[in-house]
Length: 170
Image (tube, rainbow, N blue to C red; front, side):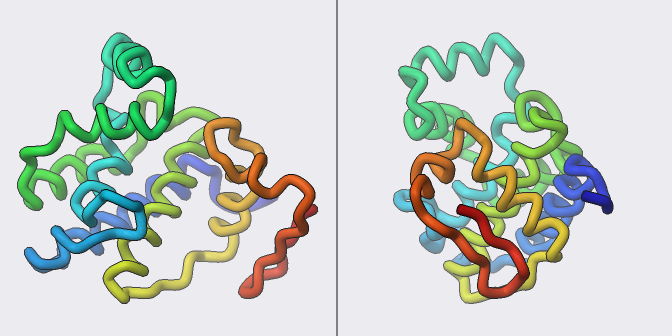
């Protein structure tokens, strides 16, 4: 597929998320997101929280979390529990270019995570947007093949078809 590479798309998505976060009100920061148990603030931190982990810290989080992604996510998120919105914005700005584990699969992890969670924030706040079609196709394709995501297992035996772009599988 032609067009920007996954890492460029991930940087673009994080920049778009940063723009959104920079304009949120205090009430929006503490509003529930579409991720159960997480506020908008938590989702914003989660998108970049793995970028700042060293390899030993990442390994320790996975061991302490019992290699269960929800537990690991909660452990990593807890490191940033005291950040104020301005500090979260600074963190997202620092991590606009993905690094560490999020660069895996040529940036597929960073792109997919940021795109999905950007929507988790926007939809919860009633702030819709249209994801660029080339980006959406790449996210959909990656999500179905990434072992760490449940999409491949959850879609087994199903035909999936997007209603807003020409994309289908199964």
